[in-house]
Length: 238
Image 1: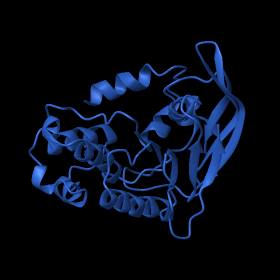
Image 2: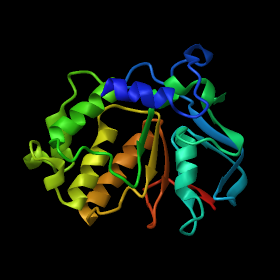
Image 3: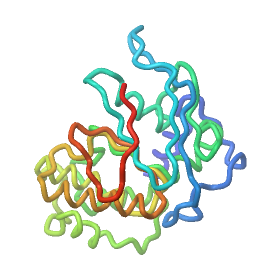
C-alpha cells in the first residue's frame, strides 16, 4: 500500500519533491500546526472546452469550514480535486500556508484527507483490513485503536466483514472512518452525508465540530445544509 501511495504522489500533475520548501504542516500524524490556511488565487478550470469556473479566489483559515455550492455540472467535484492537487487548474494556484501546493506536495498530502463520491474501500477486504491500509498510507502509529474507531462509526460488529457485504450506508461510514485515524490539517469531502441515516449525519456533524475546534479546516460539497452550533460556514457558489 505504501508503494501505491508513493506512485500516486509522484504521478500527480506538476508534482515536485521539494519537501524543504515549507515546514511540515504536521509535527506528526496526530497533530495540526497552528495558523494553517488554504488559499485560492485566480483559479480557472474547464472540461471538454467548456469553462467550469474562472477567476476564483478565496481563503480558508484554521477553524473554518467552506461550503462549495452549485448546480450539477457546475464544477464542484473538479474544484475539490484541484484543491487536492489531483488535477491541474487551467489558471491560478492553490496555496497551503502561503506555499503553492506544487512546491510542498509531500507535506500537503501528509496532512490532507479526501473522501470523494467513491468510497475508496477495497471490497474484498474486511473493515479492519481497510483501516489498517489507511493507517499505513497516513503513516499513523501502530497503536491506533482500529477496533475503537469502527465501534465509534457503528461498525464494531462488522470488523471482520468484507466491505462488499456491507450496506451502502455502512460502506460510507467505513470511508469516513479514515478521518479519525489521525488528526489532519484539512478535510476535503465530496457529499460526505450520501447514504448516511440521520444518526450517521448527527455523528459526522460532531466530528466536524471536533475538527474545526482543533484548528483544522473542512472544505466540502453537500446537497443539504450543514448546521453546526456556533460555526458559520464560508460559501463559494459556482
